[in-house]
Image 1: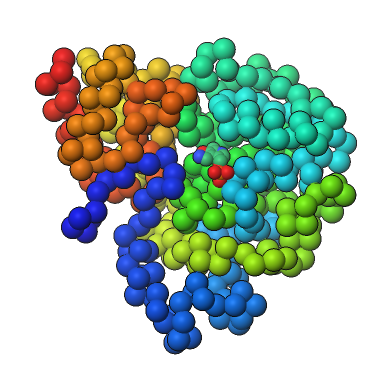
Image 2: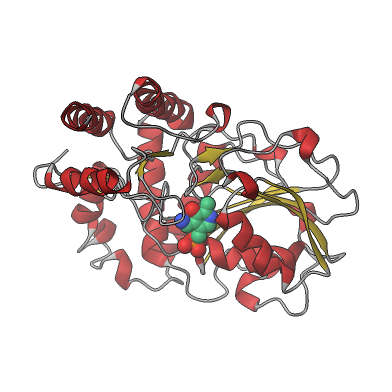
Length: 362
Ligand code: PMP
């Protein structure tokens, strides 16, 4: 870590790798001899065309995306895609939603506006979303256009470790808070989408990875900029794309390659998460109520059980040079988001702080 930078445990926008920020800084005023910053470039220029094409090619290679999938960079964040899904895939007007947190709920609420039926195939809301439903709990509809899941639940700290079996019905998954953090078998999904601002880039776009055969049936109501079929034809450039975040995404993908790819990051990420969970499991002060089998590798949620003590923890953590450890208001307590760019030293420093706080407050 460079001097004057702090460990930022934000759920998103979140830390970016320092080498990426430094490279962006270096290239800021004059990108590859163009005499201008990427921010100032026409999106129709040759030099920018290379950036967006390279970003896409690198994403394909890093995620090992099969040839029969298309990649799009679209605006409106993951929330925009919530609406775009039924508008592009809801041919028959029916979809299954598995509710594992408020983003899954949000996605379904948006879809309800456009579908005849958004069916809840399972929900763990009654258990405050502390676990992921099991396959035998799923009430799936064979005639659904798709089944939607939120793969990593940023607020509740849970993750689908085994994807649901959906037969011939395409699985659509929100990977906003786990994309690029581990290996992904893209062929298991009909469509993957993710807001960029956690593991990919600064805020400004959502990536969509969609199987080709699911294109071609957009609703006439679908806004042009979220029409996946049209955007594929126009290489995500129906209008001006978020040029700078896409450029930073390319730099992040370069960095991922330099780390040894997603397989290497997966190892580090699992290790970082295990360090925290192992400590939480033996702690006398902190607890985490997430079902152990479903614990997120990216968002570690914990609490002391005493709201005042939680507030004291957050206050003292700030004084010690950490930021954004306050849990989401729906859950309370604390949350450490440890995406790719959080170095292992950051987790070690947090653990040392947690141990000291436990000793002083038990
Ligand atoms: N899905 C998940 C899993 C998220 O964590 C978030 C944002 N934190 C969203 C969707 C919404 O993303 P956006 O702000 O890009 O609309």
